[in-house]
Amino acid sequence: SQAQQQDLLTGTGGGGGSTNFTFEKKWGRYGSGNGKFYYTHSIATDSGGNVYVTDSHNHRVQVFDSSGNFLRKWGSKGHGNGQFYYPYGIAVDNGGNVYVADRNNHRVQVFDSSGNFLRKWGSKGHGNGQFYYPDDLAVDGSGNVYVVGRAATGVKVFDSSGNFLRTIGSYGYGNGQLISPLGIAVDSAGNVYVTDVSKRQVQVFDSSGNFLRKWGSKG
Image (tube, one colour):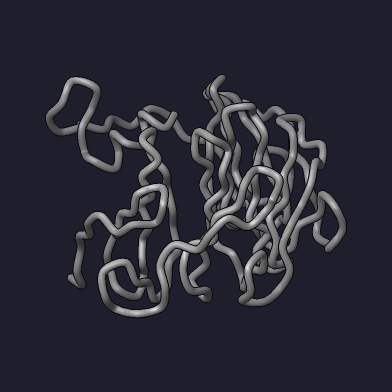
């Protein structure tokens, strides 16, 4: 949930103080069968606790229950609707729709929770509505979609239909500027957290794209 995500970002649990993590379970091993992976990249959960994993080099999404039992999968290598060419980031909105950053196809694809293709947007490039190897994405409570890629400049924001809204950040080393944005998350208040792999830092923006704070350095 977004609240749990915020707990991880701030290092607090529901009751405050430091979070102590305890190992519970694991699943998966190398391969191409159900429940096996070849380069797991990103993970997301829905409101029912189901787990969605981008199995990048198998060019698919796999879905499990919270105990790790395989439920379903979709996708194959290709460029058509519902196909992937190295899926990376994944997010689930409040309605259970699944958004995937289809990295080497330079697009975002959207599916229902059963894996049925709904829509897509994007093409290769640096213009509004275009992507250059998108790595990760996040969805806020209003259904807006935030997309980043280490080879791109800034965070591109879209509504749930794929209409371009705005760009957050620009290329550079100052506050609110990004060099290689790689990961992204949005909390329940709509604040946007971006990891910048080249600058070794996290930057935080409000939902309008105003810089709030940052932390981290090389070390």
